[in-house]
Length: 196
Image 1 (cartoon, one colour):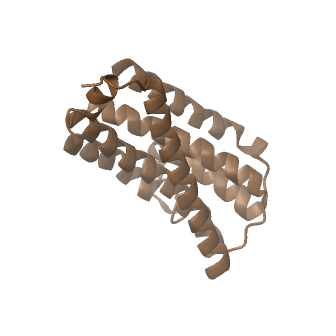
Image 2 (cartoon, helix red, strand yellow):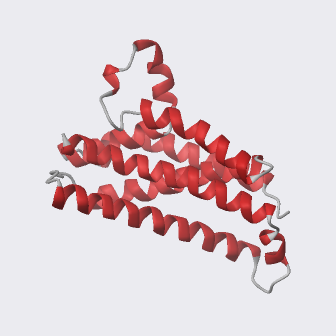
């Protein structure tokens, strides 16, 4: 059971931190005029935003590492796949969901609205993407929605690598789909981003 759950929980953690963490922080910074004050400092805005993204990425990867260690050492989950491939997937998942989180934060007028919209996006993915149970148990009518969720290919790839040792090349369509989400969300975030 833990062999099945561990990759799903790691993927879900990347999704939740990206959606719930960054949306609240960026919207709050804008609402409290922190972002506007950054413009008045000698630091370049791109350096500030890059540091913010790096901070969230490091937090994401640290959380996934802690979950991995607890799952394998305490609950004896077996990971048969390549740890480097799992790391690549964790970085890709982190970047993708941080980009989605940034996009949500820029379309929201307040921190509360950003948090609510993040929850609306987060909730279906948490329960429908296969993180906790096989997607085959979910009604057939919901399968097209499940395939459209960006968490689904991340869960599939992480589980395939961790439990059966599949190479990343087996998941190239899903990886491409995650990259499309990351690029599209980043484009929205960059286009609509405002400092105040």
